[in-house]
Length: 317
Image 1 (cartoon, helix red, strand yellow):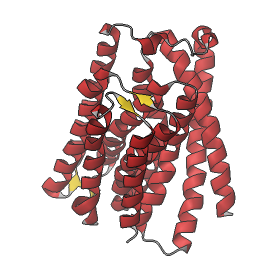
Image 2 (cartoon, one colour):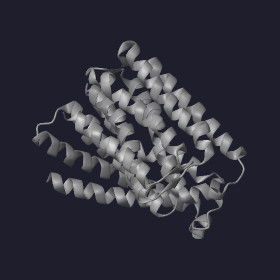
Image 3 (tube, one colour):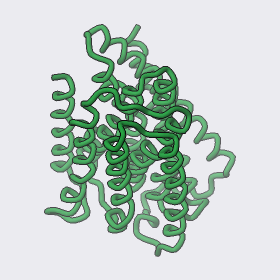
Image 4 (cartoon, helix red, strand yellow):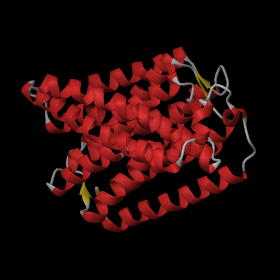
């Protein structure tokens, strides 16, 4: 039965990713925003829904390790697994503004999470409020910067389906709902099947949270990003992943901590996995700038994917 859940989950995730990308491209036309911004906001929020639901449920049931491990593991998977595989499939160009604003914000959130945890081994309700408030400020600044930015080639891509420019708001809303629901149920079934298989193999709860559950809740990002890349909507792919990492820390942990403080129970969270999270975030800078500037090509994707495989191997050691 576990295999059935996994196959059904993967099918729904592919369907959800397709609808989400189409809705996002249509929305970018309607709002006259770049696809990078749409990826950083609409797509990121939808694909982060599984992390939010899993972390909330885990924290409410007293499993803080799963709540934290899910977000930390998912953010690592987004860069190492998802971005790595997406770059292997299709080279991703990087806008200069990415390293001026969006990448530094992601690194600051990752560093802020580490400092908050190492301070008193928890994320308090007050820190949850700060995370949510900072997310609102980030989104306001992001949209204002996008409105003031000059049109780029990314916004004039001739490969975009011109029919999406005339799509109604009603159809876009329906696509978003279908995509979000498919991603939600797909990730739920995938996590259920994968967790059952992991438990039968005798793997610990914490190892499951940073690997199996984290990969399961990152599959929506994987589906949306790969589908976006195959459709030549590469700005949505990169924006989705960076935005998702920001949303995971600010909204998922922020909302969860607001309801119930998140405690650090397993010392491995601070001893190793937070450093992996910071390392993957910082690794994007040299990979994006050297030796081929502003590009994540196939061999750089292999580096990210290989590093993620090392992380997984150490998690189970």
